[in-house]
Image (cartoon, rainbow, N blue to C red; front, side):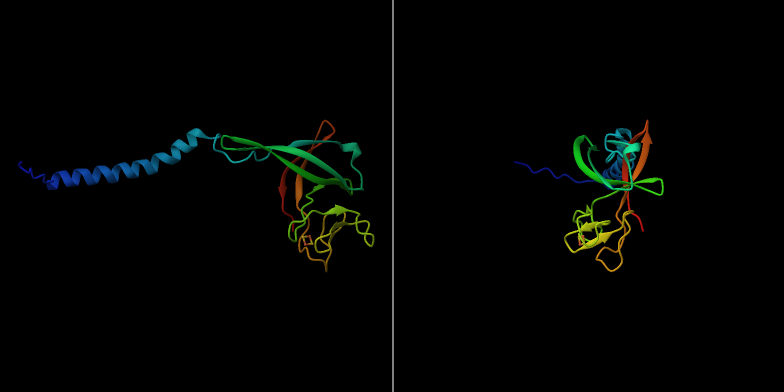
Length: 167
Ligand code: FES
């Protein structure tokens, strides 16, 4: 049986190499274009979407009220529902919607549950305290205010959007 020598010429070597490198570079340039073409399917979340929390503007008072609501989250092709909560309160005529997540280590705050400080939000984990407008009380573990939802009023009803960090 004869063994056939297969030699690659310099010209063939250059052709193979340049074709490979060129293909690799083309794929790198095309990938972002393909991704953009598939958007918004690959877009993470629904930024800027507001959700009704079933509370009318007239019902909001200086006494914080907890509202629980569900937000639909889209992540690529995957859709899910996320349960969220907020404390809605009126301060000097302005409506605020505060996150119930303590800014110290993430426990859940409650309104008026500390007998010594009944007019504050209280976090039972490390005795963190926040004022009615969400400002952290100095000398307690949290070092920044409660986060705040974007608020919109549509036809007299309260809608909440993204959560933003304050302070
Ligand atoms: S988690 Fe709230 S005070 Fe520490």
